[in-house]
Image 1 (cartoon, rainbow, N blue to C red):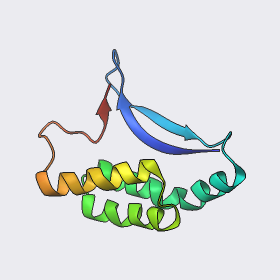
Image 2 (image 1 turned 90 degrees about the vertical axis):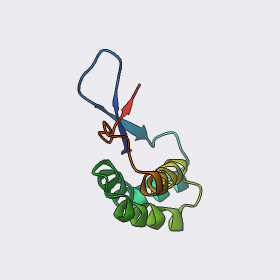
Image 3 (image 1 turned 30 degrees about the vertical axis):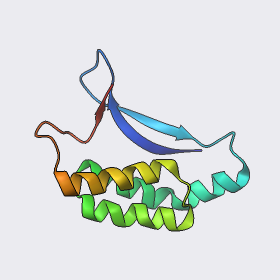
Amino acid sequence: MYRNLDKVIVKGKKEPVVVYEILNGNSQRIIDLKLSTKQNFELGISLYQEKQFSEAIKFFEKVLEKDPKDKAAILYHQSSHHFLKYGVPPDWRGVKTE
């Protein structure tokens, strides 16, 4: 069981690599919680990557209503607000460069 976390361009590559969060190893309660919010979380990421930050925020807020401690949703929520307020760099492609 997993959920999509991000896209990252790793050193030596030109195309982004998808990063997944593996849910196995968590308690069944956490697994069930993350699976119950997976669709909203991944829709939020998709909108975020398309620079639709206002819409992305709505989906991250749905996740945080069910799981206020979801660190990834918190980070995307904060980042979406930041980009709404300050804009994105001109070369931003919705992926992180590592």
